[in-house]
Image (tube, rainbow, N blue to C red; front, side):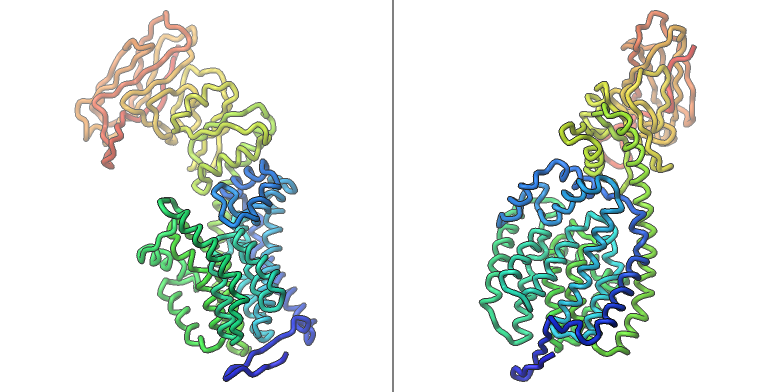
Length: 579
């Protein structure tokens, strides 16, 4: 270590080849212990399952050409299509071919990258002049913070993970390596995630705090940052989506309210107070550089109120790690970690339970679909009814695309979509009916029409026409007019209908009536003047053809209590032919 006076400040220079020279055994033991503790604390990640973004990214990667990633990588703008972050997207391209849909390898790779980032955190702190104990504290803080645990639990956050990797490499190579290498790393960081666009501000802080003043060295980074930043602002004009940048005090405060508690795993004001406390030590140049690095990587996040997640703090935590590395007193660090480790682990246990519960739901949906498609490769059209809350529509589509050959993508339609009836008419269509109460997926391949239908979550949707609403465990609401198709047995003499008349209907409509028709010919009606579950039986003509169209009409309709223009009939429990 060499100290060089510069005015009233002292610049501490640490040669990279002497980082481990004095106590390599101790540092090796520390690294092994840190790795072991991390793997033990986060072993639950291997019991997780793909998130919706994972399934979508895997499906896209399976059909992407490697040359496309290279083309997107060199473009000096952010691409407009789905693969606009080519560096981490390449992770999915490789893993989709190497591991297919086995979850464990995906987690192993992201945890290995995270541990590599922990090492880089140590090296950056040392390159900035931190003592070994301070750099070790920075590495430990960066390794375990519960606010960002999903980064090393969910592959979907590989974008934040790899962005942080190249931010760290940018800083390290800027301080100790060739300038050109640092510029390349900065470009790769921007091509991993856009929040790196203000990283050059941290380089300016380094030059200022360490009194180097090499502004021409920073200039290429500022130029690249301006190129991406101006393009992003132009692209943002006129857009209204969760990814839109919103430069308003309300938007910024929304983000502050979300992220500040994550810093200390407590309240908003506690998080802000912790940052204020760090400011008290701002005279230390490591603290100054760390705070500027933190805020530079937070700037984009503070104007994105539509997209917030604890995992997004992963790269900004590089700055807090640098600030913590300024503390070189063992007693202070011992007190800090004695308080922080149990508090942090407590939060991890809470979040881990929620994470694994959501993963179990997604696995319960995915597993029967995968087994069915393996045995029935001809299935090419899927209509899904309900889904796990953490599996968005694009996740359902991604999952089904990833289970089919790339050259034969499936047709995927939501049951409430206008295209559902056309999809259900196809010969190899399949209904995927999710039961959110039992966390069970019913896979219902197209089969011959039934003569009797129960309107629960396993109803064959291909027999239902227009006018049917969301499913329930034991009934389904109809619109004022609903149509269905039934197979008619030769000995059918009676059409049986079980209905549920709720108080909601009788209180709002005092003289309602249900009219039942077969092939457009009315066969009977009933007054809906009493709240109850009723079973009705109507005689049917003997000359009905097979199949039969059933029409149910309720008048007057029930208006939506919520005030929307939607109109309701009544809940139907079951209907069909009886001998």
